[in-house]
Amino acid sequence: MEKLNIYLANLAVEHIKLHNLHWNIVGKQFVAIHVYLESEYDKAADRLDEIAELIRMSGQFPTASFKKYLEVATVKEIEDSKEIPTNEALEILLADIKLQKELALEIRKEANDKDNFPVANTMEDHISDYNKQIWFIESSLK
View 1 (cartoon, rainbow, N blue to C red):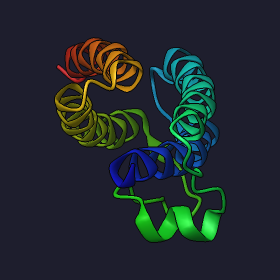
View 2: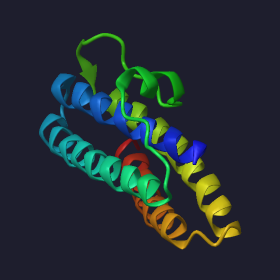
View 3: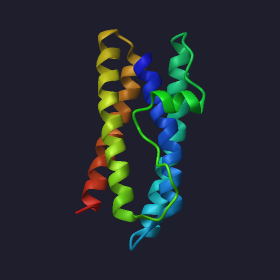
View 4: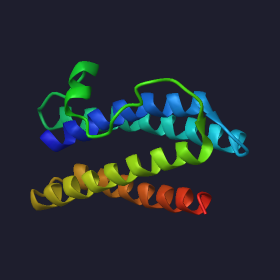
């Protein structure tokens, strides 16, 4: 469950990070990306609850403080508020999605090895969505 708690921490940090990007982007594609980032932070919030519940169903306790999230997360927060060009915001999000996808792949493999199908299936769903988001963002950055 250690990796699942890291995944959870990443979702918590990403949720706030997405708000920062959403509030502070500027550029020609502002409206479309502003709306897209809102949908992504809503998704992160839903996944945060989903992963915490998977951890509880396994008899463990999810990490539940921002202090601990920041200690274990591999997604890094944006330290300062400033204007962020739309392409830079997308590049930041793309890097985080790729990082989270790699962690989800590791968790899915471990869950499969232990016949933990609820975790494996959840990770499979997340990986599928990450693949789609990677395609969307990389297409937008061309």
